Every structure is written in structure tokens, then in C-alpha cells.
Image (cartoon, rainbow, N blue to C red; front, side):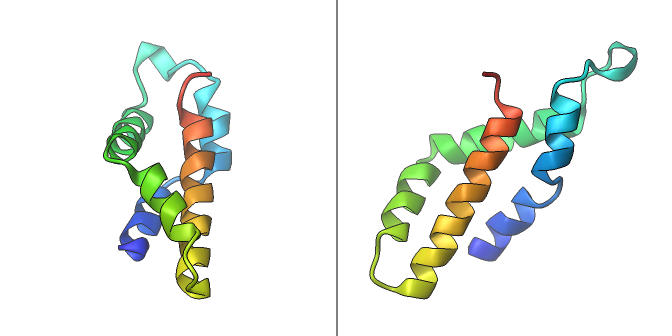
Length: 85
């Protein structure tokens, strides 16, 4: 499952998202990739992804908790870049 989520999160890196989020859409058209990423991220967060990753990162298994903590950081970075402030 971690691999699938990492693949979803690395479609577009947060640096390029931050560059595009502040700009108006070209010719008045919305950016569909950014809109799709917002919907997917919101759905994952609405299903309890943040709570689950937080709980997993506190477990005793070092490798497992490190992966959960890394994924939590990626999700929060992406949310910071995509969601309105």
C-alpha cells in the first residue's frame, strides 16, 4: 500500500505544484491535474489517512513507522501546496 500511495504523491513534485498554484490558469482554463490531485488528496484525508499514518508512525517497528512518517510528511507537503490557505 505504501508503494501505491508514494506513486500517487510523486506524479507531480511539490515544488512544481507550488509554482503553478499561485498562477492563474492559462487562458482562463482550470488546471485539471491540480484539480484531480486536490480531489484525490481530499478523499484520502477524508477517509482518515492522516490519523492512520500518525498511528502507524508511532509503532515499535522501525522500518514500518519510518515509512509511515515519510508518507505522512509527503501528504502534508502536498496538502500545503494544493489546498487554499
